Image (cartoon, rainbow, N blue to C red):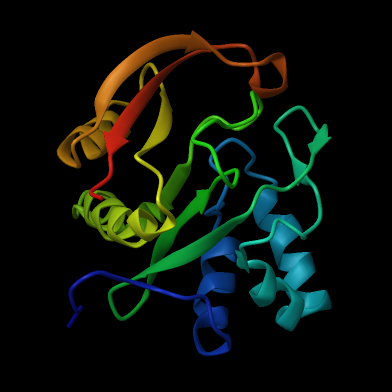
Amino acid sequence: MTMPLHLVVPDPARLSAYMDALRRGWSPDNTRPEAAAEELLQIESDADSFLAGQDDREGRGPPITLPDGSEVPRLPGYHRWMWDGEFCGGIGFRWQPGTTALPPHCLGHIGYSVVPWKRRRGYATRALALMLEEVAAEGLPFVELATTLDNTASQRVIEANGGRLVERFRKLEAHGGAEGLRFRITLPR
């Protein structure tokens, strides 16, 4: 029997479930499927370092690889795993201290991905709601999230959590140059 979805801090006890999802084809980065293989290698090389990097509020970790293969400095951020008794997906938050602005290569403050075998259960909507409660403590007045034009499921998740469309924009070439939608969610003070 599954339990209600909640967010957990990545930990050694749940790492094998995370690795299983990566092996089954899920990627924590929906713009870079190859991130799954990269993370598996990192975990197999140094699991403790991988787990420590899941909560990097100083942005000290290695650079981030963009979809075109270029690298950019890591922003402060942290990840949570969706859990219903089993691994369900991941959600992450990143920011620049002292501002709501993000560098042009960072499409939004929050990104999430549910494993394919757990989709259509409302998990992304619930995970985003839980993450918004957590990130409100960072003091930002709002967060922004971006989707592709055709990702209506993600658009519904964001709107269900109070998101309002603020712009249609063109992504940087590093992200393929396609059009996207940017939403804003006001955080409670």
